[in-house]
Amino acid sequence: MSAAVPSATRNRRRTLIGTVTSTKMQKTILVNVLREFQHPKYEKRVRRNTSYAVHDEAGEAKTGDRVEIMETRKLSKTKNWRLIKVVKRVE
Image 1 (tube, rainbow, N blue to C red):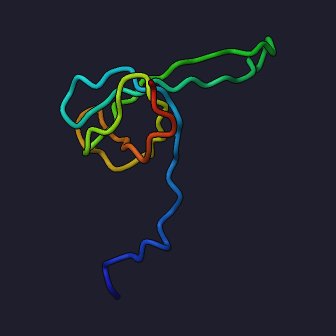
Image 2: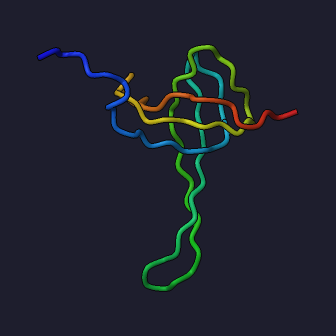
Image 3: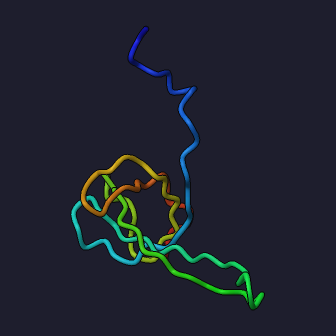
């Protein structure tokens, strides 16, 4: 058996869309993802923000951009997401 797995058989990875909040690190950006859900008991809409450290190899994202990120293997202590594309650029 071969150890290499073809890319067609890899499982789907989780993707999120968020806003870039910081680009002050080398090859790393901070992305804020807003999610809305209904509270199970009180049935009110609840908003939660989560900040992710994202790997940006080319440094293409700027503060305020809407970006799509994908879950990946652990890259550092806090970084296990990578940038897929910039969805909308800020002026």
